[in-house]
Length: 156
Ligand SMILES: [Zn+2]
Figure 1 (cartoon, helix red, strand yellow):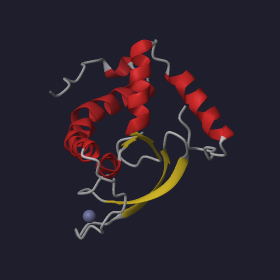
Figure 2 (cartoon, protein in one colour):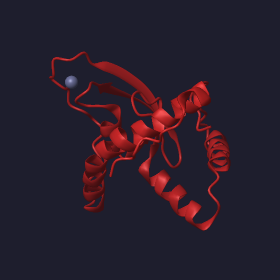
Figure 3 (cartoon, rainbow, N blue to C red):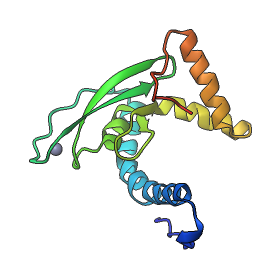
């Protein structure tokens, strides 16, 4: 189901509000639908007890490929990772295949494990959602275990 564009008077919105609205539209209509099949595939393999293979074979398409460096947030640690991306192998699809969710649609610098998101989802069913409190608690928890976000990478 595609999200209908909201008709707002553009000149009455701030630049930030227009950008935020465009990004929500992009997530809802393009990014999230493209991640459903990879997510179902990951979940099927995970439930069958398969090990997630985070190695990727090289894409042979003729397009220019980009090396993307990002931080993956596991339940108990942070991990620096690299992805080779192109339009036929976007970062989001590769990350969901690994069991992570990208924090931005195109070139994420941060990805959070689906396990962690499942935990947060269950937590927020039982208490008022508070992303700031979760981010602060997780950042403190990881820092106490020697895993600190580099400047520019943050859950906030
Ligand atoms: Zn390619």
